[in-house]
Image (cartoon, rainbow, N blue to C red; front, side, top):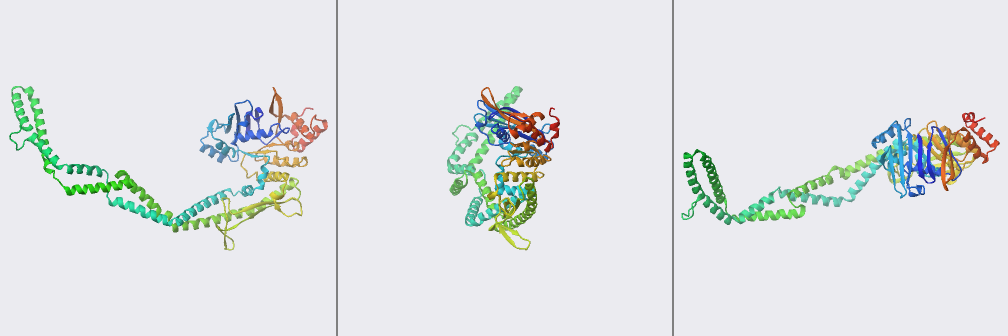
Length: 589
């Protein structure tokens, strides 16, 4: 339940800290004192849209903090799961929602001190508080709201969600099937293109580093004569050749030097390492000479091979222009094309497979829709009976009420089986195939007519209260807020409205803003909102009333000020009728 609402610099509220109690909490005060501002502040901390005008003139920032005790809430488990998903740590089963509004219009939100977003506050707040505003009874005139109320009464929310999920999948399959059927030609063309590209690259036998190897081989073949001359010259320099006039080769010179060092080593053993090192160099030069000779002997001009290489390089470069800068990119293109080809030719997009899936989903959606309709029809009869009884208690005479369900046939809709074995297709949306109309006959003998055409504001307000009281057991929101539920309700029926609100406290905390003392008399906690002037500025104040001041407030609400003895007696009688004798016992004698 809502334990405390702390407000700073909001509209004409300077500072306010309201300690709400369990049961029924009433807020009263003159028109314009700031009661609706209080609802706006509560809405802001519950995630409603905010603006700079909400910040008190002259202040830089406005803050609202709402503290909740969620220990015994009916929806504790789903709320705990949501908080766990949001990674919000709870302390002592308390939860604090905070909203800060800058004078610039920007706002920030916090949940148990952690920064969050207004949408998260709204998500959490929807599980904590249900605010019924001054014009919310007008929602009863909308078919969508009527269907929502009926489903809450029928407790068919899970079935409705299952149907919506199945219908969503059905629509997705139908869209895919339509796409496949309308794009058969394009798909065939795409499949042919992909196959051609894959075959072209695969048949070319592209491999990594091939281009570099071919370029190297081409350079060798194109310069074979020069390479042979240079290799011969290098070999002759290292190992000698046919030219006897030329300088001695390196190996001959090194052998001579080796013999000299060998003789030195016999005379001076310390020079043996020099001899060994030169020997190693000689062996290396001899190996190198052999390799150079082998390279020279292998060289030969091969115009045919050179032509083949040029053709292969040209072919690779043509493929590169089409599929990628190198062999790696071309091979990756093949992988991507093969994956797309699999999707286009696989069973997931096969028209026949999709058609079978569409038929199965349509049949499943039709069966779910019929189950949902049956559940609604049974609930509609029971709801009508309970609403008529509640309307009677609310002094609406012998008014009649009915929730009429209808369907619209649609050849492109979903097939719904009947008990007679006949299948009919009906238009459907995420809520099902039913269209609902709340019907009312305000006076005996009159025909039922749509609520939106005949009900007055007072009648719809009382009808909303009747529905709230009927649905209170199914409604898991712990705190219900009614902003002037007495719109269109006179003092004659105020006590009845108060009784209805008092019954809601068995499963909810109720906060009501009212002008009627007959309603306020039923409250366990009573707050007075007043507008005063301080230092030349208008300020809205909120005060929790004790027994004596509450008695005075009710008397003033009855007969104005100054309070008279007769109005005090009337207020006392009102408290007795409301069962608040404890308040009377605490009054000074």
